[in-house]
Image (tube, rainbow, N blue to C red):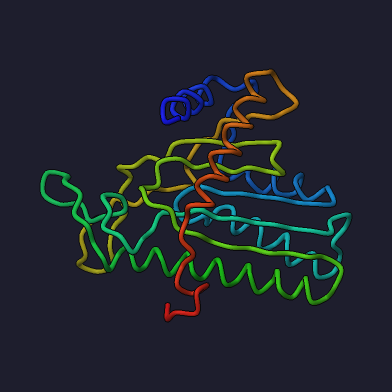
Length: 226
């Protein structure tokens, strides 16, 4: 089974039938995704900030005019920032990654903010009665290597983070390994393209669903103190 999973994922990294797009183009894909009755958007990556910004404005607009959409499901899978990590981390001597609990906590709080903000809008939409909406973040073990966006289970955007991208800390703090999602180029696969593209889309859908089923709900969704 492990061999088959690795083989399927390797196949999904073949050259797509459409050109690469920039992460800053995600807003266009979000707009297109919301042209149907049942919208499903799934994200696997670092914090989801770029996608969050596009979704926030789109969902806010639903309060005035939901268009044809009647159901929205949004899922974010991000690393478990409660665990020791090599990325994100502090840049140590000779570039050695050093786990930094405080920095991980900052990133986790950012995800918490995005999650609670989108969930609040989703709740308002649902209470208004015209659209049923839900949004949820979950944690998976690992580092933010892949950036994956799946739109309505038919279109997949996939790219690889620059894992050694650095950011400066506050004041006299050191540098940190902190991937920049907005700089990530994304390959595009669609069910409307070749057989290889269809297979890639199916593989990523299954992979995400499997990770989601195994993922842990964050403490703010379990009623624990965040």
